[in-house]
Amino acid sequence: MLGSALVPTGADRRERKQPLTVHHLNQLLLVCALVLLVAVAAVRISSRSGLPTLLVYLGIGVAMGQDGVGDVHFNSAELTQVIGYAALVVILAEGGLGTKWKEIKPALPAASSLALVGVAVSVGVTATAAHYLIDLDWRQALIVGAVVSSTDAAAVFSVLRKIPLPARVTGILEAESGFNDAPVVILVVAFSTAGPVEHWYALVGEIALELAIGAAIGIAVGWLGSFGLRHVALPASGLYPIAVMAIAVVAYAAGALAHGSGFLAVYLASMLLGNAKLPHWPATRGFAEGLGWIAQIGMFVLLGLLVTPHEMGDDIVPALLVGLVLTMVARPLSVIVSLAPFRMPWQEQTLLSWAGLRGAVPIILATIPMVNGVSDSRRIFNIVFVLVVVYTLIQGPTLPWLARKLRLGAPPGAADLGIESAPLERLRGHLLSVSIPEGSRMHGVEVGELRMPPGAAVTLVVREGKSFVPMPTTVLRLGDELLVVATDPVRDAAEKRLRAVGQGGKLAGWLGTGEVATENQRGHTAHQKGL
Image (cartoon, rainbow, N blue to C red; front, side, top):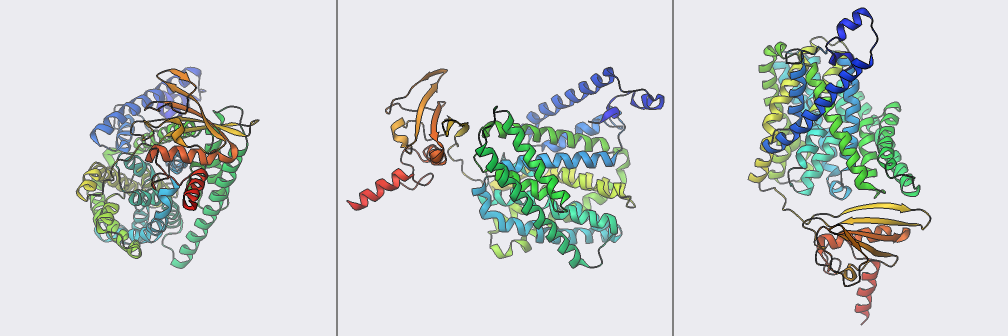
C-alpha cells in the first residue's frame, strides 16, 4: 500500500534506479501483515478501555512515522487522499449494509436536516471562531469549519455497536454520518479551489443538484443490484459478497462520474442491498465487515504516517480552541436549529450534540487544501488532526456514561435470529439456515407451534453436532440450527414468521408481538370472528 515508503532501503533504491525485487516485496508484505496483527490485537485493548479504535490506529501510524520508532518518511497528501477516498467508500458501504431500514426510516427527515441545515450552522459558527480566535483568514477559516463539520461514519458506526441507544437516536446518528459527507466534500472543494463563494445560493444549488444525482443513482443501482442477486443463482456462495461490494463501488463511481455525490450514492445503494434479504447474507455481512476493518486500519495508519508530530507544537492551542467552540457551541446549536421542527426531547438533543464524533473523514478532507496548494494548508491539517484526536478521546469514552445519565440506554431485547438463504434454482425455492442464539424466544417452542406458511417446512435440526429430522412435537433449544425449505412465493413470509417467533415466542402474531401474522393466522382469526 505504501510502496517503498515502508522499506528502509527505498530511498537508496530510487536513487540507484533499482527495480523492486521479490525480496523487497516480501519485506513490504511482512510489515503490512505485522501492522494488521497489531491493529487487530489493539481492538481488544480498545474494547476494554473504551478508547476509540481510530486513535489506536492513528497511534500505530505515528509510531511508524519519521518521529517514531519506524522512522518511515511519508508525505504524499495526494496518495493519502486517494486511498482515503477508497477506504471511505468501503466504510460507507459496510455501514449501509448494516443499517436496518425499519430503524432508520423514521429518522430520515431529522437526519437529512442535520446533514444539511446542521452542517451549514456548524460551518458558519466554527469558521467565525477560527477567524477571530486563531487569526485565520476567511478562506482558511471556512475550510476548517467545513472540514470538521462532518461526523465520521467509521467512528459513529463503531461506537453505536457498543451502546444500546433508542432506535430513533441511533437511526439519526447513522443516517447523518452517511449523509453529511456529501455536502461537506462539496464545500471543502469549493473553498479550496476558489476561496469563499461570492454567490452563496449558487453553492446551495450545486449541493442540492449533486445530492439529487447521487441519491437517484444510489437508489437505482441498489435496486437493480438487489433484484439481480435475488433472481440469479450464482454457482458459489463466495461470489455473493464480492458481487455486493462490487455493486456498492459501481454506485459510488457512477455517482461521481455523473457529477453527483458518490458518497451518498454508495451509502443508499448499500442500504438497499442490506435490506433486500439477499442469499447467503451472513457471509456477505461478515465479508463486508472484514473489508471495513481493513479499510479503517489502512486509512488511519496512513493518516498517522502523514503526520509530523514535532511540527504540531504551535497548533495545539488553536486546535483546542476551535474544537471547544465546535463541541460546545457549533454542534449543539446545529442540533437545536435543525431539529426544531421535530420537537425532540432535550435529553435526545443533548446526546445527539455530544455524539457528533469526528474521525478519519475530517483528516482526509484536510488533505484537499494541501493537494490544491492553499496557503498554510499544512497548518490546517495539523489543527484538524489535533482537534480530532483530542475531542474523540474525550467524547468517545464518555458517550455511554452520558447516555446512562440521560436515561437513554435502550433495554436489551431478544436476540435476533441468524438466517442465511441459499437459492434452489431448479426447485424454485430457498434453503434457509436458522441459528437460535442466546436470548431467543424460539427456545422451548415446538416445531408445529412455529406455524410456518404452506410451502415452507423445517426439514432438519442440528443439535450438539448431531442432526435429525424433527417431528411436529420436537422442542427447539438454544444453539439449535434449523434447515428450512421454502418455496419462492413464501420465502419472505417464512423468514418473517421465524423472526417473529424468535422475538415474541410461539404466540407471536396472536398477541400482537413480533412480526405481522402470516396468511394462515389471518385466516384463522377471520374464522374465529365468523364463529
